[in-house]
Length: 61
Image (cartoon, rainbow, N blue to C red):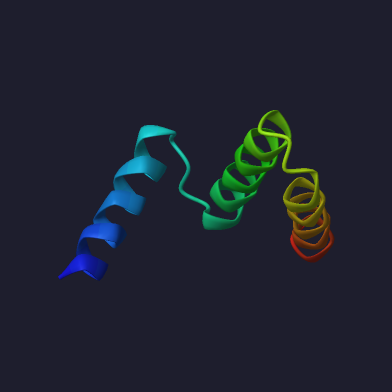
């Protein structure tokens, strides 16, 4: 049941932002998480998120 709710929430949030491409939406979410980590002083986490963003961009240009 919880998985269904998470899935429905994910779809709702994607549609609100008008993203129909999951890779585009994931990149946006990663960038937001990176920004939040930087704001909270979590530099290691921000660095790991930035590395993942760069990997995703290389894989899905």
